[in-house]
Image 1 (cartoon, rainbow, N blue to C red):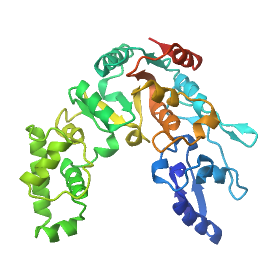
Image 2 (tube, one colour):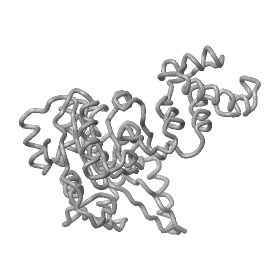
Image 3 (spheres, helix red, strand yellow):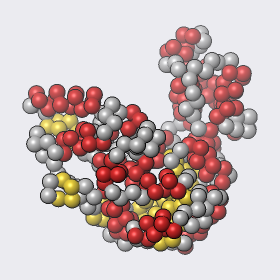
Image 4 (cartoon, helix red, strand yellow):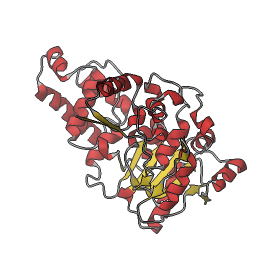
Length: 346
């Protein structure tokens, strides 16, 4: 018997205990793969000490055979050289360091010094992408929080795509799922509570889609009002849906000129030829650029504990071209930090 565990760095202790019970039976070959530097789930895990997450504990255990995979088939040589600043971790006598297997050198990592205005930052990014012939649909803008996603979306006149893993399938199914989440009901519970069937739920989803398309629903607040006032339903929880995710289904349906925009958690596991990572503040940027392993792993507070690794996740999405920016003007010391990491400031 075989068990394959992907994204092992995000395994919490509850799941790991299940894996351990299977392992101890001695009847199953277990293969776990993950990257400790991509652990960005501290808000949803029982262990608050980085050294105690399962992937770190098992890497030092004699009960497991540890094999380092240093081959990077996504990022160019220059991007790999940059992200190696953040992922150096000793495993016994060996320090982890990746090697690019893409076959291309790529562009130097760039820092766009234009600040305070997302529109101007994005304009510079697009110009740089045009110069190296990376089309809009292969570009991605990554930020930390959803308020920044909204700001970037507005700067792009909402001509955006959400990460592909959230745009598979029908927009109606996506809206139905999010509507049920807002109502805190399963499909069966919805049908029972409102004396309806699945066709009524689908009808509501179509009404929501049309309301987004004609401008009746412009944001999450008007989405909530529409559910209550127009559909006569009762919201029980927060609104998980992002209106731009719906809008992306029918604006530029082929996605040819739309740029992907995402927060860091949603973009995890995906990639783009060109990436622009925008920090909201200089403090946020400095945490992304932190190279000291002890500092990167130290617990600060619930809001900031994953910040260094969030930067690593964002940076490592880029295949050929990585650029970084900040909405605040950076200090000379921060500029020096960027230079020390081999980043060109433009």
